[in-house]
Image 1 (spheres, rainbow, N blue to C red):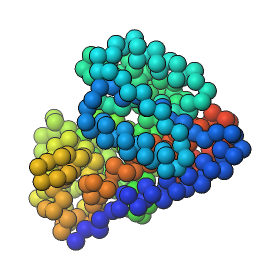
Image 2: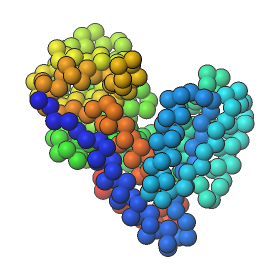
Image 3: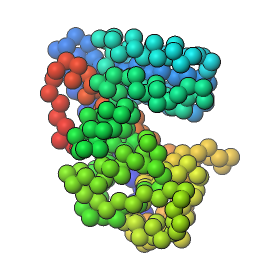
Length: 293
């Protein structure tokens, strides 16, 4: 029977630590950290994520500004808003909620965000620093997964880690981080739509990280006994929420697994808060302890 990894509990501990830190810093600085979020359109899942981020900010004493824009907003208008937020000394972090409407170029928008306020860690400058082993802001979901592995004392040194999915948000940065000697020093394989024998790779994984966007794609026949499973996906089916892994099917065979909901999701939000506090401290030239990664 797999151990159920409680991402909500780990995330709550991180939020409590940040709350105490913000309380002390805001007395010295005169204000707490501020996160500005841009949401375009009415995509329902984005609404859910924005509300979760707003609640988390409120809980720890972080100011949250929401800019909810009409779906037909022009590229020039959204770029102008981001430039104003870049120049706003009261804003420490900026995030653009994805996905965006099809007429807006995601890369153009992300590249306009100041790297110093890019708390999602998506700017090419920050991704480049991550690539050479000197990250400033680690993308939030990969950072959350690393924190889960660390908190659960899951050994990564030389481990066979298989990642399903090569997105710029999860798969690619996570693979790079896990390869780095001072972070994980793992042996990493990325599988994708061009992978010829998926079963060959998933069955040899010591740690299997699934971010495919396909509900219940991974069953017990695709893993070996004692695998650690990190399920990044979340889907709303008629019977309720589920991940990319068939939880009920694999739980008797895996050693540990993150549930959906309550696994990676809360950790992603917690890492966003952590990145914003880091940006806030850098804004006021306060030394940041980056010993975790």
